Length: 324
Length: 219
Image 1 (tube, rainbow over the protein chains, first blue to last red):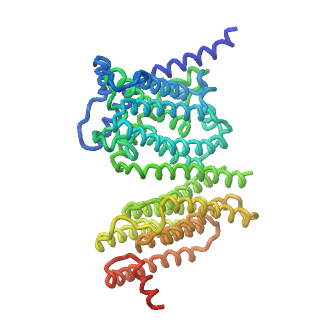
Image 2 (cartoon, rainbow over the protein chains, first blue to last red; image 1 turned 120 degrees about the horizontal axis):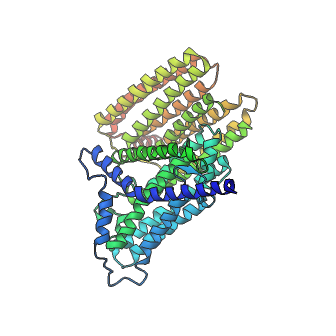
Image 3 (cartoon, chains in turn purple, yellow; image 1 turned 90 degrees about the vertical axis):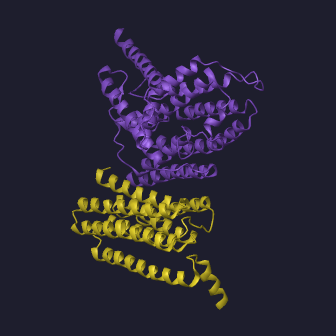
């Protein structure tokens, strides 16, 4: 009796630990990225805990609702935050085989990210304010191409791992002898381009930008204040964490723990923190060494990502025909 | 799949990736940097193949690639850009998006051509050959879609990188061929450099459409 229940209990426990760490560390990760960026630029930078303080400050501020807004105004931040949170719960971080593993289908994740994007866009359009509309328009333009590129890239993962869930892909890449292949290198490049666009980092959008004309993500949030803004900002921090975990789980799943085996958790945890830390160093270095693109160059950038995804699948067929 | 082949393929893939991003670049400085990266990976691939095949010749190929293509050529290309005060942006003959779609189509052609024509060969050199042929075709495509002389030179050099990639992937390729190819490129580069001077003297620009006009008038 006990032996049958124990794995389920462990899976539940792993999921809870995962959820707790995800929600607790997301602002910290954003803080580390900002700090690294400041250091790389030769500045001192805000302390790492600054995002926590920011969220706490927003929690205490009065929440204002513009007169022109409709009744749906308060629901968009909630919808955005909830869909990103669900996506975060699905993606494995330090162990595979969590309770949510069977649901972590890549197509579901794309849908959740699209839902969050749609909620943000509608929130931006809510007050009829022109910058919000411009931001929403750009976000829609980027979204079409980013989703397309990710969909094409999934084909490669599915063909190699024979699974479309993130969990299944991580397990297949961890346990199977996949080796290094051209296809995965192309898929990595495509995924990174999509991740940079989705999280609004520098080649496509500037998270620290304060020029309304160049804003994309921030432009949609200009009319939000107080707790609603908190939800949007927290969602943005979570999104960064979620994408880093996703890339870590798919491309660097080595020594990730198993939910049923408690002894493998510490190594998995240490590795996960290491992966996040590594990416938090690489991302700012990449950001300061490249310039933000013009808005109409971004579809081209994502078009390249889509073509790379297609190439990854093509070369997979070349190799498979040869290998068999 | 053994580590030898997967690493070789990965490096081939990175070279192809560099050729592909060369096609999508619009700035000369970035193109030269990408070419340099491509040549660096190529020399690493040559060293790796030399180690894997146990051929000392390939180390020499790697060294030549490293010194001539990864250091001397990019440096002198940058020098040309500086000295001629060239336009930093590259003029293209067709939209970049179209040329990238064409590029993917060419890679497809390369794969389709290589696979059926090499049934008896050692199975794993085939993928290498497909990648090398794609790099060659992409370089040719770049030479046709760019207007500026310097961008065309970079396309030519990228084509040549594809040839060397094919050569180092084949066990038993005589070293002489590669040596001559490397020298040929240097020679061609010098010739083109002199040509650039002449073109510049006559037309005050490196835009080749001026040449075409004269050709038309002459007929």
